[in-house]
Image (cartoon, rainbow, N blue to C red; front, side, top):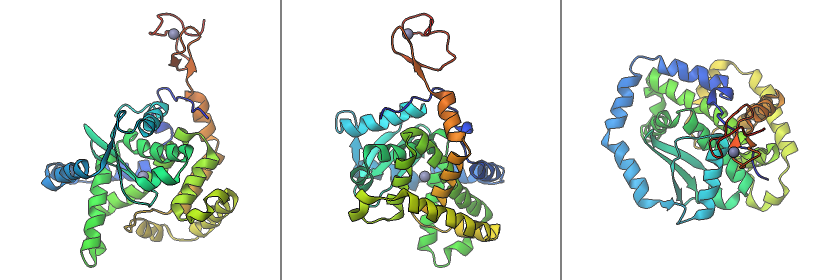
Length: 299
Ligand SMILES: [Zn+2]
Ligand SMILES: [Zn+2]
């Protein structure tokens, strides 16, 4: 299925309110700039990027055209301006991440994500990461990642968290909801999006051809009921615990609620690009000029 190009799609249209609220709170915290500058100038961070470029496989149009074009297609679908450098690294967890700074963003895909997902599901995962890029999450993510690593290294590391680190890790989790929406907008297939999440949640490979979204959706709905009975502070505490796969069932539940609200369909409809009748250039519905052939695109 060819995906619809979403012309001029602003991230504010689909950002999850928890993500936005947590990020606003984080940005308002005194000391964040100091921390950010410290991180940016910290040699370790630069080394981390150098190390990654020196050890992972660099995906380019020449080295791996199929994968490159898939990522390119997702970026075009979601209207992402900052196209990242793409790398793959060995590992059979279904995982991907973005790292770096604005001028130098890297998208890293585990080989497991590429091998164990079909193309639509892979577009979901890549779209999720593009969502992080579009919303400007990448730098803060890298900071959260480093803090999580530090927590793991220090005994009782969690008790040493300062409020700002706590806020950062909490926001990190919430930002996943926004990215999941971007993933769905990229792959444009609700069932395949849920199937990607089921695979991430840990269904064994031998059952991959028999994935049952309905029972997973039921699990998500039951989790939602359970969740509503737990105090917000408990959720917040659990939400910052360091783990690589954040709450897949919770995430699926949030995504399903968003679909049910009608927002997903509304956005697809509103931003879907249409081809110019003269030259095929994809433009937004309300354009009155096509710069490719130089005239009105729909008259
Ligand atoms: Zn993410
Ligand atoms: Zn045209």
